[in-house]
Length: 116
Length: 163
Image (cartoon, rainbow over all chains, first blue to last red; front, side):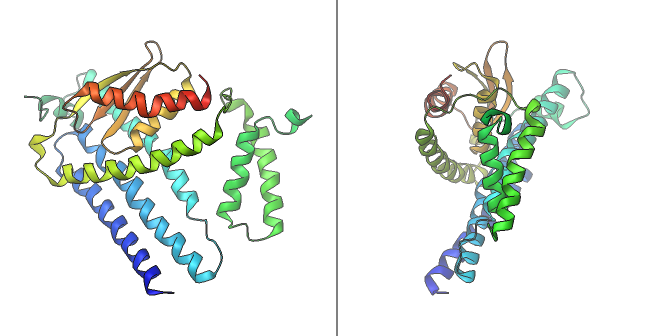
């Protein structure tokens, strides 16, 4: 494996890990439920995407044959991640509208940052 | 005859390609097994699928996938900066995007695309009023976001699937 390929692969892995970290930082830092939903979408798209791309390049170079396994988890993540976000958001909206004050969604409705 | 064996040709193609990808198309036997699955799975599950829309412009579809990938990358950078930066400057908002398309499956597709692009999550597709409810992490100008979603994604989907 040439240094250039190694460099590309390691850059992609670090980039992927960085975006997964950023997704988690978003989850921890953002103030309300709906804003927090935005964290994980970043992690699934760029984070997992870059990591899987690195894996595809690594195994294609090492085994001297194109490795396309990695496309499958990417595909499954891309079709399931929006469904998860959608269900979480729907559940939060439902709790908000039914006046349940114990949940996080209700807390979110009490202070909405940015909408002074 | 063709319809009896392959009631959903696009689903069959997808199952076959996915099978080939998962197994890395390692041997001829695995490809034969993939072909059998590509025939049997759509036959067993055909009642669950919505009526498929004709895919009018497959090449436009591929170009759209490229554009979508680029959008994901640029939006990721933007949202990354927003997450690290000062949070009080963000203007989160619920935005209602009025839809021109009238197909539940394509509307779901649009919703998924909006969710996968960082910074926006689609929350609800109202099929009475045909409105897509979107939550945006930072939308100081909601109208600009509506225009962007309609211009970039909805119009392309309408062209690709003819609806």
